[in-house]
Amino acid sequence: MMQRVASLLAVLLLAAWPLQAAWAVYRVVGPDGQITFTDVPPPSGGRALQQLAPSAPTPAEASLAPALRAAMQRDPVVVYTMAHCPACRDGVALLRRRGVPYRELTVDDAGAARHFEQLSHGVRRLPLLVVGARQLEPGFNASVWGGALDAAGYPPTSQLPPHWDFAPPMPLPALAASDAAAAPPARAGSVPVLPPPNPHAPPGFQF
Image (cartoon, rainbow, N blue to C red; front, side):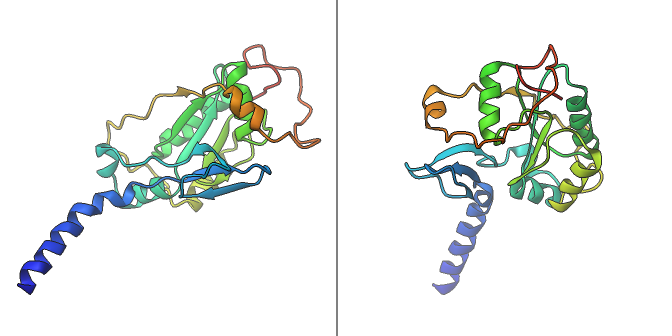
């Protein structure tokens, strides 16, 4: 009888093992503007501005090398870009050369720009790389980006399968009117004075 119970428990544990990756990290802004990171869905008093990790790995992700898969689950990579941005292209090229699976969100209109400014605390320069809970300084810097990926445990050279399909860029949605009204006011001096805008960028943005 005890052997049968032990066998049943082993089967249940094996069946539950793939669910260990079904977690998410939320970036939450409270009513007072305080930002916290948590794996618990935010209560009504806070708003999840960005879900930083997928809820579960895809079959392709589940087949990756353990070190790479662990880094993806612990510190997922998100890069914010815009069209006609050479620095953005350079940043994405670095991620691809290194074999870092990433999520690319594009900021190509005024609505997306307002949403991006709220997510990034007033940043108005691209590209912007987020590794897990760490938001890097805006702009592309190969050594800084590489150091952040090293610290997060991403392998120094690509371990992706030869025909790995990187996720296509997705537009960052415009900020909803309700979220815009609930957003805390920007702190004085938090938005830098910028040079004349690039004609291809949303108003006030640079790269």
